[in-house]
Image (cartoon, rainbow, N blue to C red):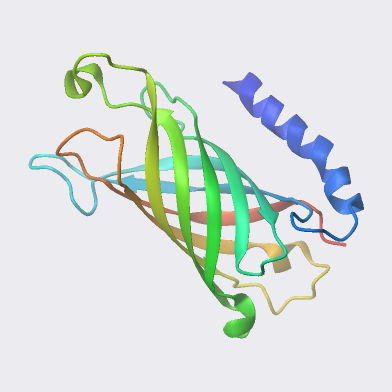
Length: 197
């Protein structure tokens, strides 16, 4: 798994210079790369009888591609949950539809809706029935809130770009019958590229 993380880090570093050097966009704009260490909480909202809530470390490496439409961006991310049995990585991809922009809240808050595809571990064989696959695709409907706690710092400061995120995900497909479809994630969004200057 460390090899996978090294590949993600190398890819991020290789793209950083290109992201900073690109000219103004036509439709797709220069990508932004962030790391999102945080926590993932499961079985907190609609857990089946007898299930207990669990909180685990979650590591996400995210690429956001803004578009000329100020309220629409594309996103792709790679995530790991260290400490969970198997620790299989997952990827997510889709759109970010901004409902409330930082400039609408004095720079302190943004709210978005993210319709995502998720390719991640499938339910265990005992829950999946015949034809079980290790991975499957899921439709994830995500509510996204970002708190810009350091926005008052000068823009060239690294902390100026750091935000606290809160995500509420509803897995509409691809989960075991009777399982909790809700997932809560929270943590920090740390800029990787372009680097503040």
